[in-house]
Every structure is written in structure tokens, then in C-alpha cells.
Image (cartoon, rainbow, N blue to C red; front, top):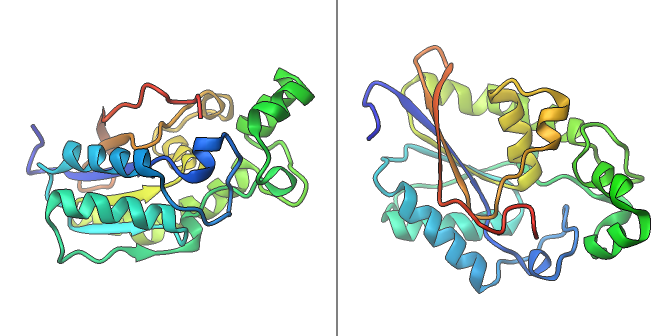
Length: 215
């Protein structure tokens, strides 16, 4: 299914968390996975168990660690140790952190809600824009992940919705408006084929989540 001449970049969004289940904006709040989230992680693991993983990167928030732990058990790779970095953490939602996103939508209206939730550079008081996330996640990718891919290593990144959307924007050269329309479901897997120059030459989406964009 996958060429031995290509490296593979595997992006996995963490499984459903306590805040996801309640419809709350999580951001930097360090919450755990719920049982469905552990199942999301195991489903992702099953989807990639045929790929030999050489390196793993996670954020400093435990929902990525818990997701990686479930994947690690499924793929039977106790020898792998994930590299942790805050550059891969979720977007800070500032004053909206901990609020129910659907109640906010009802209060502010569809247009304002989508600006808060998905726009490229719409500011949130005390928080980050998607552009801010891009500006910390992409340098990490270029410094730490891309060199591994160029060496022919298969690299797994277990991240967050906004971190991974920022990476996808960079990898697929999306417009600012394009990334605003991108949904990356909980537990979903993007597998990119990467050549020796570090160029993306193929992509597959595995373990698709039917609830994408609804939590």
C-alpha cells in the first residue's frame, strides 16, 4: 500500500476529551480523554499499524500523550518515546476558554462564531489566532520533523485540531480562506507521502470521524 521509497508523515488528532464531550472550548486547559476518546485513539492505531513508525511528536498537553499511549499499545511499539513540545499545543481561546461553544454561537450569531472558531487572524482577547498557531507549529515542523522525513523516517505527530490545521495549511499550500473551511476530526489520521526533498507527493485520510466539526 505504501512505497518503501517514500517517507510518511502521519498526523493524528487526539481523541475526544472531557471538554470535547461537553462542547467546551478547551485550548490550553489540560483535560483527559473520555472513553470514546480512548476508542478514537485505538481506531487511529489500527489504521496505521501497517506503517513502521520511526519518530513520534506530541504536545505538552496530556490528551495527546493519552492518545499516543493507546496508539502505541495498538501498534505494539513499546520502544518508541515521543518527543514533547509546547509548539504543538492547541490554540489558546483566551476569554472563551471553558465556554460552551454552542451557547456562544447562539449569543453572538453565526458570523461572529465562525470568526472566533475558524478564521485565520481574527483576534481573541487574551488568546491566539490561527495565524499565531501556524507561526509556532510550522517552525517546529521545519526544524524537527522535516529533517527526519528527509532521512526517510516515518514520523507520527499526535496533535490538536488547530495545530494540525495549521500544519495542513502549510503542507498543502492552502489559502487563508481555505484553512478556515478545513475540519480535522477527533481521532482522524492524515497520511502524507513525502519524497527525499521533503515534498508532499500523496495523501490519504484514514479513520474518518463522522462527527467531524460537530464537537
